[in-house]
Image (tube, rainbow, N blue to C red; front, side, top):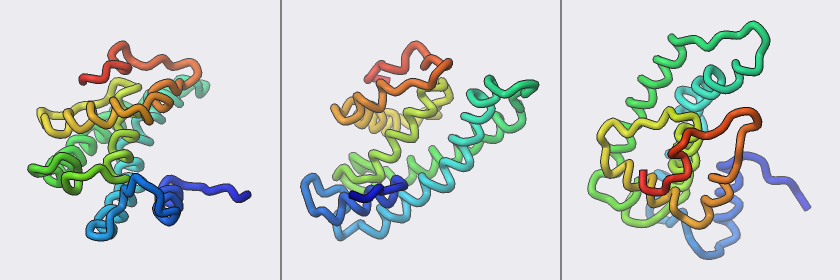
Length: 163
């Protein structure tokens, strides 16, 4: 009985089990891995972590004040990333092609963090908004949406499935 640590490692482990659903098809597996890494490094470090630190963690630190500069930079980075995701989705149903992949689940999970703290902005990218609604509506996301940060309530529309 071993612990499996890290979202990308867990995705690879599940892929190696070869059980349906197959969320990393052979045709796109390199692109899927590249984008999983993008979410786990760039998106997390440039958007999620700074916003969580400033809007959540600093609430609980003594003599700590959120930095408006860091928040503005993270919001600007969010716009850049959403433009990139919009470029990726093109005319597809999902980010890589017309099939659900691990990338779409990472996308949904990442956006729920921003949604929880009311920092989600689609910048008029309707396909990205629709994809988020589809992913957020999946039965497997019920547990994610039920998670709470102690001392911080989600914004009032967080549980709405039709964003």
